[in-house]
Length: 171
Image (tube, rainbow, N blue to C red; front, side):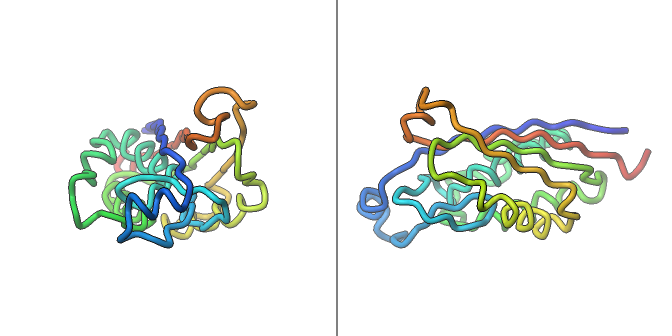
């Protein structure tokens, strides 16, 4: 049996200075996508490290497995999760589904006007594959802009959409 899951996430972009004023305990926060630090004058805002791509991957896997979403699994009201590396959350999702499901593939699209992501995609794929103990060929990541339209085009946020395919270990 196969199951398909879809994940979507959005996080607001803030100037580093504004982020540091709002979250002084988290100064030095970087823009992180798929666990990879990317140099940019803005950072993503969120309870965790705000890794929008990893969050969408988590939701895609959880959805395919028929489980509750990332917000239920890791609530943003939990002070222990504040600033947490989202790769830790992804590893936990991988463990959660591993007794019943095998990840066949993950296909992701990041929507961002800036930064340009082409130079980072290989290392992002490697990071996700390593976290989930998969072969890099099972991970595909693409990046696109919205042609300066909407909140992504105005550089107010970054979004990610992910589709994953799971196969049952007990068919």
